[in-house]
Image (cartoon, rainbow, N blue to C red):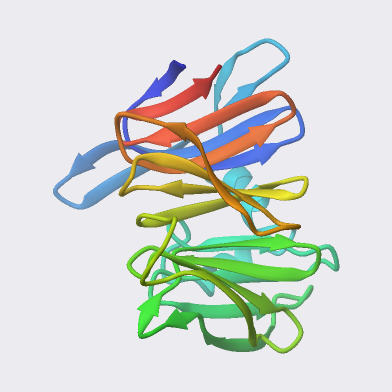
Length: 223
């Protein structure tokens, strides 16, 4: 495991040939100063990028309008759907489905026993959400937004799950509590530990053969 960036990383976005991430550049009296960097896998270079590039990657072509619909464009979770629509989840549990012209076509909440969803991911036209405080994952029908399946809860293999990432037919769950990546087989729903860390793991991303984890101390390339 190799540290590639030291500091507070907010979110890593996969690119075709690299990754783009937002991070805390400074903290002033006015608040947190956010900046953005891109890592190219071709030459390993780090490049400072503009806010608009980050927003375009996160929200798609209607990024300017969609960013205004979010309470916080850094902390909001987004999924670019195959049909060009965008699904948003805010820290409050408020969720929105945005049409290709940036109009809101559905709005609701993703909650479990009054708790807010922490992250969302798409897999074969179904929506998965994790609930950090409930130690649970829920699967939703994307057409009806009704709950279809629940994994975890009172007796759970997850410990404060914060992030979900799908690769092929498995989902990687980042657990801040146990400091482990947990693997969920999306065919059998069996759960197993994948990798342990010395710090809470906040996010996991894989692009090609490169695997990254966001820990409290920074961004790491996994061996």
